[in-house]
Amino acid sequence: MAKAYLNQCIGKYLKGEMGPTDAAILKLMLTEMQCDIANDCLQLFGGYGYTIEYPVSRFFVDARVQTIYAGTSEIMKEVIARSMLGK
Ligand SMILES: Cc1cc2nc3c(=O)[nH]c(=O)nc-3n(C[C@H](O)[C@H](O)[C@H](O)COP(=O)(O)OP(=O)(O)OC[C@H]3O[C@@H](n4cnc5c(N)ncnc54)[C@H](O)[C@@H]3O)c2cc1C
Image (cartoon, rainbow, N blue to C red; front, side, top):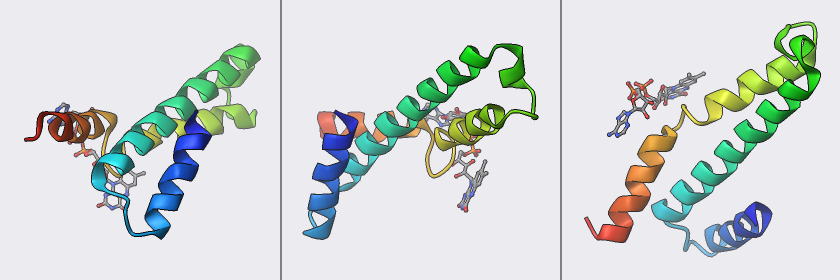
């Protein structure tokens, strides 16, 4: 689903039709999904997953910041909500 939406947005972007709401939906969906997946992967490694000796801890940290920078998930939700409410 995420890949289909990403491809749709790339198509819109190339035609100059991608708007801020599309970008907010895409960022929210993909970065939250990345976090969930990295979290599951870390869990799979157990205690080793937490230690810096294993790359999965780095993947987790790198995934976690995606929902913060370039606009947090909460701000993405606000952008989406405003577009739905017309405000
Ligand atoms: C590694 C890294 C690199 C960065 N690089 C850049 C860069 O190159 N250029 C740049 O300009 N900035 C950069 N930033 C800054 C980044 O964009 C901000 O950290 C981000 O926008 C969040 O702002 P803040 O840290 O001030 O958090 P705050 O705005 O203080 O937010 C704190 C918490 O409150 C929540 N919150 C805030 N307002 C609302 C609201 N209205 N409704 C609900 N919840 C809300 C947020 O979602 C968050 O959970 C970077 C940050 C990091 C961590």
